[in-house]
Image 1: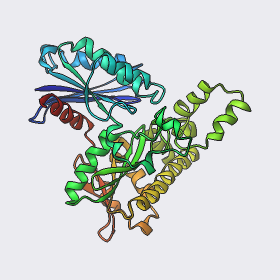
Image 2: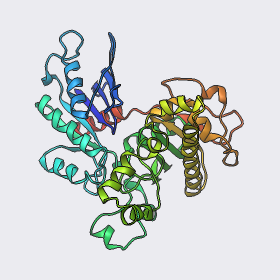
Image 3: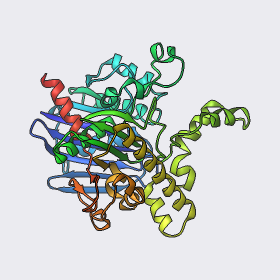
Length: 394
């Protein structure tokens, strides 16, 4: 069964065409820096890879480019869209309506649209991917896999806000958590490596960033909440902020609610601190002596270290921390910054091991460290394909 996986992030599209249950990847690729003049497109097959740099203004243009490459007469991997049995879509916010993988119909799309306000950088891109895929791959089943599903095991003490009860019971205002597909995949890989149901903190660092405390394979807490906007400092999102700042901006500075929302989601985070949203650019500038970039990286690491401390307490111990996603897997600089001065928790990295680049799971902790420090490349596309296949088979 050929399954196309579409993972539309806030500024990227990852895709894979897989044969299941053989787990054979026919092609894979990514478009990143969407919205910039220097968008990068990668298309990989067994016969080679293609890489282009060109402007990709939005997700619709990006997805159409992916479809054209799949069907290309010379370099493509399918002759007809009818070869694809299903398209699996990563959908960030499932609210209280979706705790499992589902087939997409008009009702499901309407629910996804209703949740735009809770995931304004993601759900619109996810729905755009669904709509484009329905047009191009019209004979395929369209399946949604929700990022919020893995976090549904959180206890009430963790997911409930200290606000009037009716806001939860009537309006479903609670912590949902995100990046669940990634946290689930890497935690299962880490547990298999450690050979026990350990106390693990998974750290997903990309343009969006989140952490999860995982005990016996189940999420007990996570840093994102009602929407994917709080918690850690991110590419353009502020993360945790005193809610009084919102009211101050409206009442004293003359911002409208929509303008505040735009500032906190699209103009804050690393972009607001440095003028750059891509960590690769920020690290390069920091190495040149840019003090704003140096401070922003320190702030980012400090927020993560604080959360490690909180989750170690919630777990009543810690066996391993896991770095994953674009920054977590590739930035030795950030991993070192985060793990510095964490010896109280038994966290200490080997600086030589930390410099190694690999697509495999690896340990980067020092030999005498109490806590394992793992780098586990995430594979959300495989996790989505597996869930799609299981749904269709069952």
